[in-house]
Amino acid sequence: MNVDKKDHFIDIAGEVCPFTFVKTKILLDKVERGSTVRVRLSGAESIKNVPASVRSEGHLIISCHPENTGDPYGPHILTIEKQ
Image (cartoon, rainbow, N blue to C red; front, top):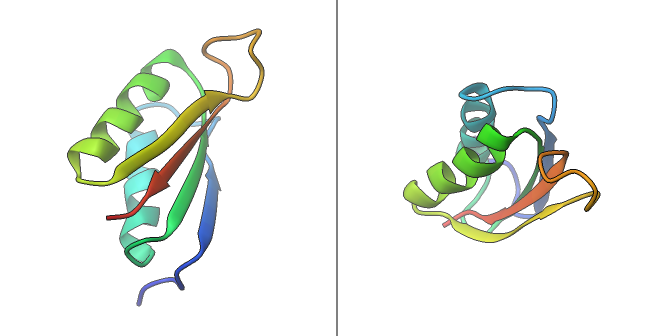
């Protein structure tokens, strides 16, 4: 069963790759096409790899920006539109 089309959020800032992508993919699989998914993540590997993996799955990356500009690998908010 798909989750209703709307905005969705998952906080995986405490997770590490590859679990960050796995949890993001599970959420994307549950939501309807056109839904917006926001993912809070952190760490250099996750910040680089999750957007790239999501894009390779065919989804649209709307933005990926840090919560605090003082730490380039601190928590970021990745915004995705499911395609």
